Image 1 (cartoon, one colour):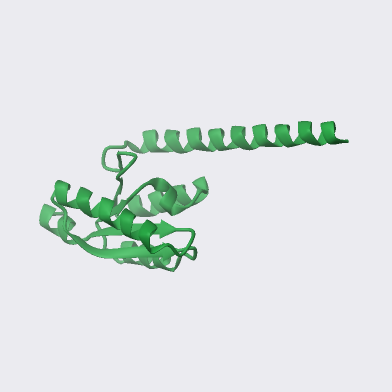
Image 2: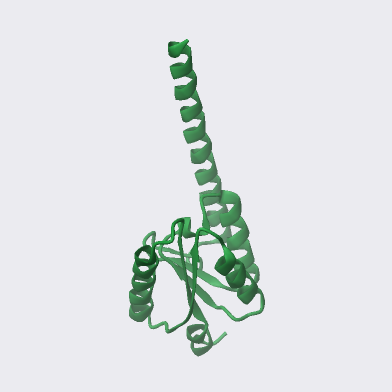
Length: 146
């Protein structure tokens, strides 16, 4: 794929859990600055508030070959679920789409597949530890209260 073709199919994905135009516009501004510094021209923006209709449209556009690069503020824009992250990154890889998380400095073209899988497993283990610790604290508090 030519550099010109890749530049012509660069998009931004922004998401906020609440209907907050400023949160979305700040994400878009950050990604736009990144795009300009990287020589990418953003051709489309997908933005979601709470629901994920634009996420679904982005998924479909990737599948149709309409997207070559997705810029987002950070990976949490995809959601908190590692299962969702994995599915999105696998879908992007399958469709030859580069994913860039601006704040985290993540660029899928720099990450060997094994390293990406390792990061996802590490994050899943961390999530499990946090949940286990939270369950332990709640259990200790419950025993003290009874």
